[in-house]
Length: 461
Image 1 (tube, helix red, strand yellow):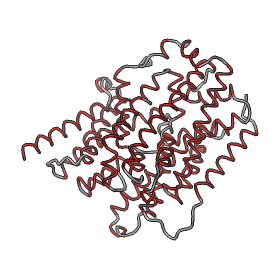
Image 2 (image 1 turned 90 degrees about the vertical axis):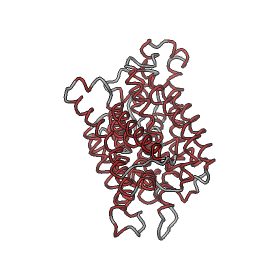
Image 3 (image 1 turned 60 degrees about the horizontal axis):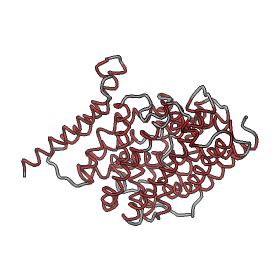
Image 4 (image 1 turned 180 degrees about the horizontal axis):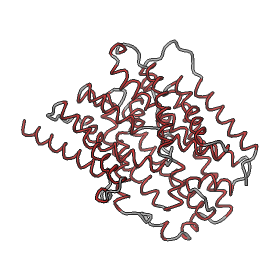
């Protein structure tokens, strides 16, 4: 089956409606940075849950690819680890973060370790939270639907997914997320139902799978799976998590919202993994990253196919707009605004909007350099998480350590340098660097520094 005119009309109508929904807001002479960044701390429980859940699946095509290739392993690298760290966030960190009453993660570093450390941390948070993997996903999907050259699809994806954020900030994102979440659940539920109707029940599907697709490791090494588990620690320092928690009316709303979100993630994971396994028995794709769209082509009638493709767009778009926004805050407010002393008393919203342009350019560049969604997520997480995660947790918990600014810079920068060097050496063919994943070397370095500072602090007391 091919994409029909009715499907194209549905897809175009979605894009037009989304931009109109997000772009228009009540006229206001100026918007404060608190309103623009954290919704004036007025975000409700439904808004919190819907926004957090819908922004979590930007790599949905990667989920389909991984499920098609490795079966239920997908849940053990993209599901379970994230529930685990989200539970930690809910019960251990959410109240502490909300109580700090600050606007961004680099602000946490700045208040605990000093102005320069705040700027340095912002650089790494900026790289780590790049929307590039999701822009690449959206570009691939646009290419699939409209058969436009991929590089132009990436430009189109970048423009459409950030245009309404420019005007409305977090409020526009939350408003559009209500639509996006409805579409994501409806689209995949519909896909599984039609696949079931055209073949076997989900229980029969699972019982007929080969052993390779029922193996939690999916044929990979335990070390590889463990790295993905620890990459999920990114949840702790995810700017989207931080921003949503900082935006709600109370710490209790954040805690309850995270628990509800985990439950909804679990339900959606069951649906998407089941869809990926149906793809395994229905299709033989040239590129497994297109498993979901190709399954849709196989089992969905006209109109329903358009709605499903819209649900894929909705999932990816909801992640891109949020990631682009927090990335723009990081470069516009936490880097440029802090460096430009002449603008220090001005409202930084204008720099955040300029930051959106910078984010767009860098994301397009990354999408072209690393044209694989899962690979890009793995590389960015492996290289940059080790340098920022332990210092961030230490700052949130207000643990006092004795260190100089120079010591602190080394603590953040050295683990990232070690991870990056290990990655480069492995790529250059030095086999000894291929034995251990770069992530482990970076984390080990950070733990060594943390232990040294703790021991030094204990001796001082």
